[in-house]
Length: 134
Image (tube, rainbow, N blue to C red; front, side, top):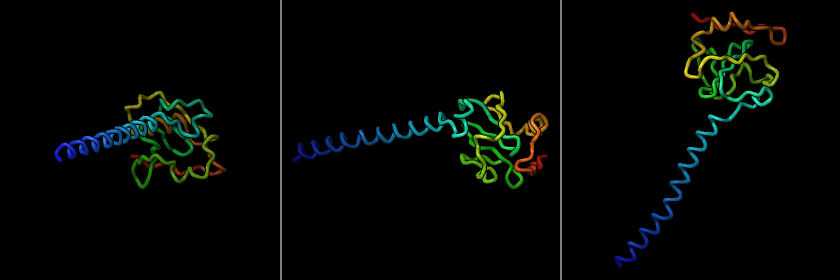
């Protein structure tokens, strides 16, 4: 009877082990693919997901690690999803500026410099309201 319990326990451990490893592999793959996953608009621009991108007409930054960084209700917000004010746009045709800033910096902290260097242009005849950053 003891041998039967040990055999069953060993067998259960053998089955559980691949499941745990599969879960770890899936988590690692997800983490890796999200870091290397180029946004849909990036392919047409030869973007390698290795730099910040600034969308000057929408006052929005993109970071491979943080997603979209945009001004929202008085503060900078980041999201993996395209901001709602850009949802109906063709992301492949938006003006972008690739930034040389290292990925461990926060470009939104230098927003006023980027805004001066890369001024916004009207989108469909209308200039989007600029963030009131202090």
